[in-house]
Image (cartoon, rainbow, N blue to C red; front, side, top):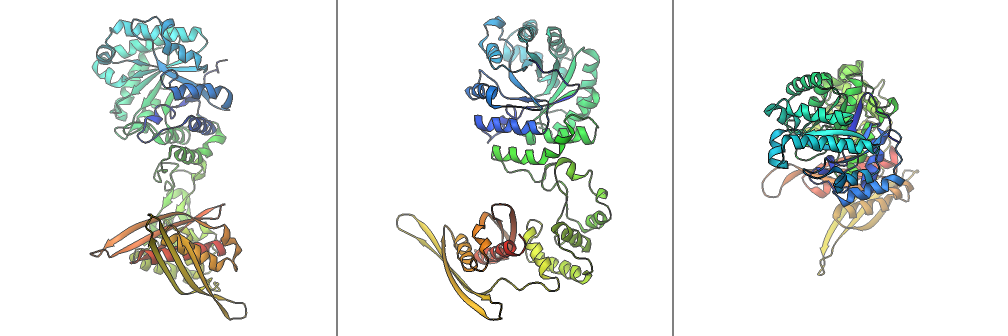
Length: 530
């Protein structure tokens, strides 16, 4: 049975409009997984795709009937009005919408006179009949219907009356919502607000908004439309979509709830925004945007010492809201810009007690500035910074080992196979003050992997937990060109123990030595801090 409408709703179209982003190709299994995730943030509607037009979407709706159990959202099928000159009952694309068996159908229709004449190649009156006939047919079959008025704002500029006629034809036939689409994404907030206010005063039904991000204003345009009277907002996860993308569902929800006071999702769902954003990014095979508003890893990250000093007094002084509301965290970045407050706050974040150690804080601040001047960066390597901080405290433990030497080789065999080997010689301290000399050899698909294997093999007898540790990612950046092949290299190593992940940093003119520093920190962190 059709689900009763909300008074204000968020409509997500990641699975259709968002999937048009260059580089995204969701499988049917991916689409089902994305739908489940979107349901967890409490959106009102999830548009699943265009049945009958795309085999993948037809299969999605067939599987969704038995595999998709939604708690908050209503599943929506998308399609077009009947074709010009064709009876609605005879249009196979309209029948496919009924066959999808969704409670709601979202139709797209032309609302720009130029598109009606030049793209559809039909008359303005026939286009109105196409809208009215299709809406009425779907309503008669028990479907709730929304109408997307394609190119509405461009059409309004050419003829401010025809789009209103399209809306009224849809409402007269039983449509619940008429959605004003900025299909080309060229609008600005002041223009959107002005047009929506005018249209809202002239039509009898509920209005919605759908904005593309070609001017970088999709979210702002959507909020301007809300202020002018729309009660239905469309977006996509992380702003995915063709060209520059769509309005970001996560930013829309966060702004509507926290800034405009509109409870558009259940209260318990707001804190799931960051987790769901990142999970969908993984399914899309697109790295999460660290600087994405509300849900990005850097959305509440503070670098300047002046900011940290104020945050130490009250976090609200430099955060526009509590990050926990959207499932995020505040972070303090320790860089060459850091002051004492930055180090103290970062220590608190990492669980390192610095109370009564003002001298340690000062030394760490000075040390960080010297290291960063040489190319080290701790803002992305919390594990290395925590080790530096703990090593500066009184009574800090000795290093896990003393390095005697290491050596790496790379062999390219005749069959095209490349093998790396590393030999590590270390001195391990004993409880009685003596040392044990250990020589270990490891192989890997590269010198860093081989070094990692050799070093862990040398240490695992003393520290068995290292057996579960492995490299998760490895990043290299060239910092300064010195001519020829000489340059300072910074390496970031992500390491995991299967439960969590941490990042360490190393810097040197030699890439292998830089990697060695990061590897040593990674294994030390696994032993001392996990």
